[in-house]
Image 1 (cartoon, helix red, strand yellow):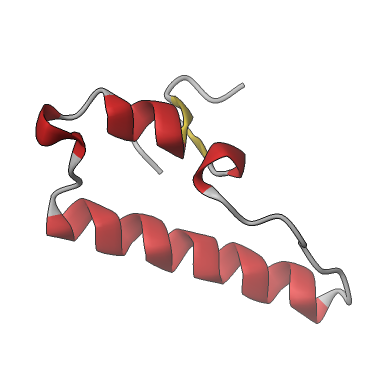
Image 2 (image 1 turned 60 degrees about the vertical axis):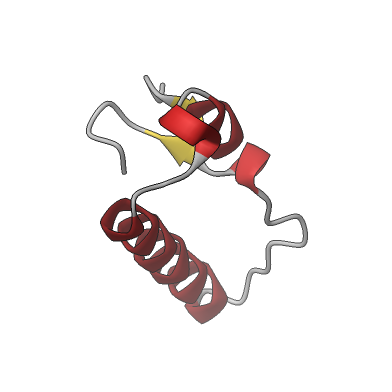
Length: 60
């Protein structure tokens, strides 16, 4: 369960619907780490989009 829902929904609730730079970088780094991990296990994700990025309460 991811309390914050998906990235698109979370972004729609932000003022001006814009991520602060530090938060955007944090999310991008986390997504890249996840992709690296699944690629090392010979899996691929063919539908990477904000609706498929889930956020926990801490925002990651």
